[in-house]
Length: 244
Length: 49
Image (tube, rainbow over all chains, first blue to last red; front, side, top):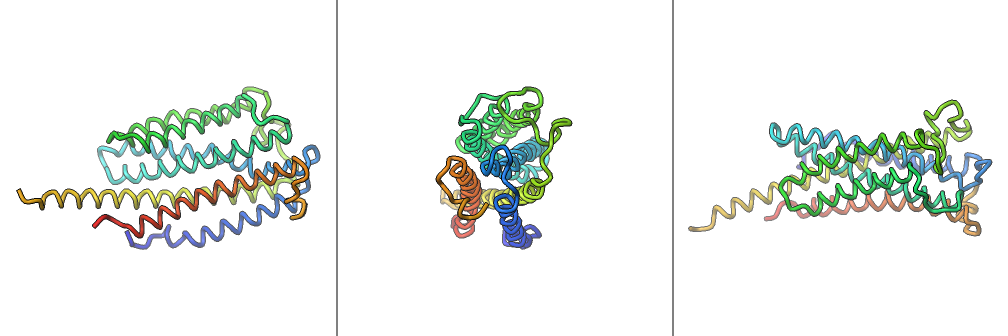
């Protein structure tokens, strides 16, 4: 486990570079971009809320693909299956972090600009459902005593992935409380060019950060699997040494 | 906007802006800290002797 790897060599420069981008992006969002004409300074929540919302719909697909890879390899190649399972659990946790941020910042923004914390709007409800699905996924992983836990979790990840396109399309199919899509929403969509640098720097920064914590959590899970296997082997060896 | 207005808590808009940014850094930083703590623990403990 102590062998150097490309990822481990990249980790510190990656982390420092990401933090530098996030600090620059923060400066852009708070101090450089002019206040929103309609909402004032509270509109600056956009630069943290929207990147988190977009990434909260990306990480579930990493979880889904890793879950499918686990199901594919679980009998033919157990080592690859373990790696896929480690990636699946890492992606599920990162998803729930981004979905939580999206929901909470959305509520804080909603209270200030709509006057309400929550509405049973299709977009908000689909995002809450995504959070609940991943909470269930992590609860299964944490509390199931069955040896089939990764298999059950992988099947659950398929259901969670189905919510993602519904979530994405919800503001296109139904017009309710949530604003219309900024990107890909038709001729009236888009943002003022003055907002673009702050938005682009924040989406880059939070994507780099998400990828960093995903690989860090993946490495941790692989290390945990290794320690668990070593302990199991030692327990078997110890049981064989007991005099009959 | 300046640091002074960013930390201005006199209006709901400014309180909510500050709260949203704190929530993001607290969630991300908390999760990163939790992974780093687990990494430190598992690295130091290793397999049981």
